[in-house]
Figure 1 (cartoon, rainbow, N blue to C red):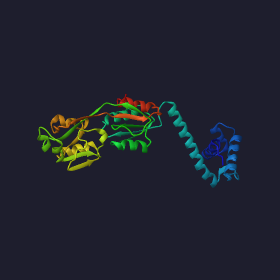
Figure 2: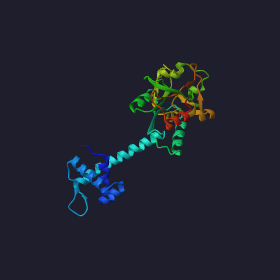
Figure 3: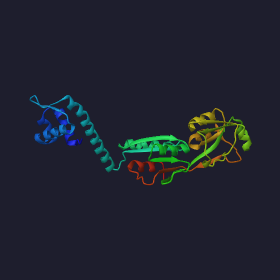
Length: 290
């Protein structure tokens, strides 16, 4: 079966306008051409689509059923035209981003706000993961971009530097660890280490390999900060998350001999063959990628 868009348009116009003449006028065609398209559609489907018994052509029940599919064809054509127009204008049909939750969300939100203000037609999907989960989600979702602090395992990716993310090893000021002038690994091991979905040796944190009696794994850094503020234990917090509490002295940087400050170097990745359009280029600019 080979049904053309011209045949689908003829059937839809007849159903909408009610007469062959009006359908022809709507399509800017002669009524003979429209009738020819409808007859061809009947031949292709092997069904009697038109009731010719009255003064006017009417759709049979079979014609009504075929009409539903004909209109789906026309809807698909319109979507294709719209997509092509968007691509020609430089806007991508969609942009999917996966980012590591340690990276500040502000620039990403600013990027999305900017797209909205510009009336961008690009469909945007953003999701947060952590550490190795970023690359896994990037692959699973076939995303366009990922912001990661871990070097990816896969090859064939273009990489852009982003501003560094600084973190501190923190505890609440009332926590026993906060009172010590100098802390060893043995001192830390007696207390609860708070982490966000575990850790990864590729981070090269000063606490890597530290064996502690208890750990608490949490879903995000805001929750981790709240747990530290409640005095449950100690852990690494990005300065953009804990800066206010550190400035007020509510949280303190621990005097750990192994080091209590660490700088992450996030990068924005995309497949080497991918060419960002207007939305992707705006993302690179918004997050300070170079």
